[in-house]
Image 1 (spheres, rainbow, N blue to C red):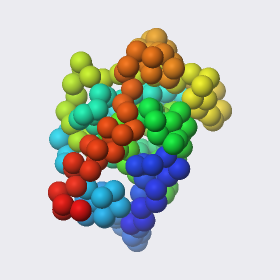
Image 2 (image 1 turned 135 degrees about the vertical axis):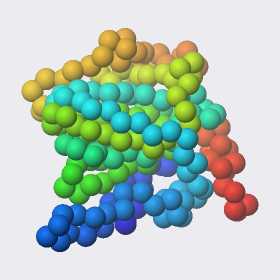
Image 3 (image 1 turned 90 degrees about the vertical axis):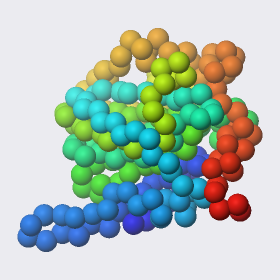
Length: 202
């Protein structure tokens, strides 16, 4: 398994080693120890989610109040999605920027997003099935969104024959509006929170 940090700090692409034979394929799609080594602290899992989306569906940009927010480990179990991580931490050197990872059943990559980062994806196929391991249970009072069409963020969606967005996501504020409303996490608070998760004492 290879773990590579993305251009957004505290977000990682995970590429598993696949073992194929005449029966099919075997792989480890999650290894707590290798992720902890890369991230610097353990991922304490609290919930697992699955979504199924038709081609063109956009989900996000979603985030939760920090602390505790919600770290996510995401992979595609069927079909393909282009997965985005957006840095919404006010004061971050990459605030407002994003990176992306193709999640599909060819390379079977996963993406890890630390607490305080924004998450979105667009389905590239019908029945795109995405599974998420997350560090906190769903808490509706602290879950928020940013409009994925916000020109300031400027996510680049591939041609999929039209995008499908929920009213919840299209009605979400822009990045600037969310910042002005005090909804966004702070970079320094995020760093302090990550340090608090390091149980090694380093």
